[in-house]
Image (cartoon, rainbow, N blue to C red; front, side, top):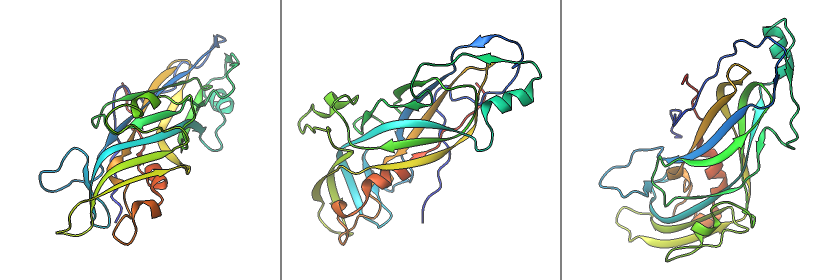
Length: 255
């Protein structure tokens, strides 16, 4: 049975209220900082290691290395609520907003190779987007093979067991124990597949009065091996899909 996760709040995640939207000033930028952490979704009994887990099949695993590529993050406006209409409803006074030259003001296209070597809760800044003012209800995270310009490639290529993540969306290495008394068996698996997920945002609104906020998403790494068992080894399971499904929506709270 899938465990429902409580939203994760890190840093300055903010729910921004709309106020003072009148006037004729030209606003040339909203800023939404995006970041990522890793976290557990499930408790584990016993003296478990930092990257030890029990999956939904009762398979016990220890991850000794893990890298996943987050290709992009895109903000999606609330359905049926255009930002211009929304602002007009709030204020009878016209408000002008400068046009951005950015091709995708609501999309962060900088790919990041996320390293499980960092401790849970370590904030990985992803970058900032500069969307037009308005209300955003969802964010779309795309996991895909890394290109040559992805952030974090150098870290993956270092250490005792370097990994070249170019062309890879996920690489995991570790051990599996599929029975109560079975000996841990080593495994190593790489994927080049893609997966996307739309996650709910809690009333994220950007306005002239409140032009800046931050969202921190969490990856529940201990669900990535769900479905893996003696009958279904890692290579036969959609692990990239598991990564996408592991995203915890960020909370938005008053600063």
